[in-house]
Image 1 (cartoon, helix red, strand yellow):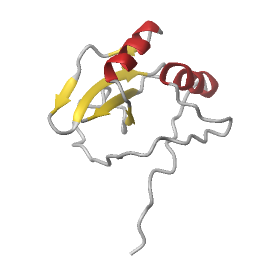
Image 2 (cartoon, rainbow, N blue to C red):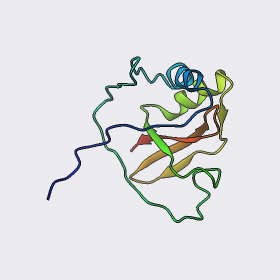
Image 3 (cartoon, helix red, strand yellow):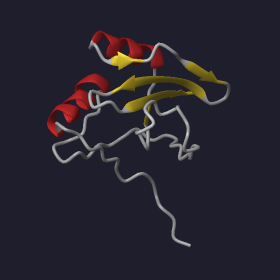
Image 4 (cartoon, rainbow, N blue to C red):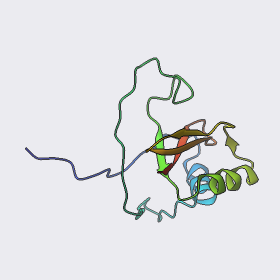
Length: 117
């Protein structure tokens, strides 16, 4: 059986794609080139399904949620707050998995930040 090799891309609809791309570069440091190509650090990727009624993604209209691995969750959340980003107050700790925090991008998409254990 053929198998996928990894995530090849993540695509987001936006009313202002240029501004949203600039937000991800400026606030999260996502250094994608002009074509969106980004060379990420090697590490784990989680693929998980959730019940249709979950509130975990924030808005019920959001069908997927992007999760970024970070080295220092507290530092990233502080950096985001300093830019005026919409950062959730809560942090979730999962023993053996890591710590989680959330930010909502300017288009209303909730993004999860994960500091692996």
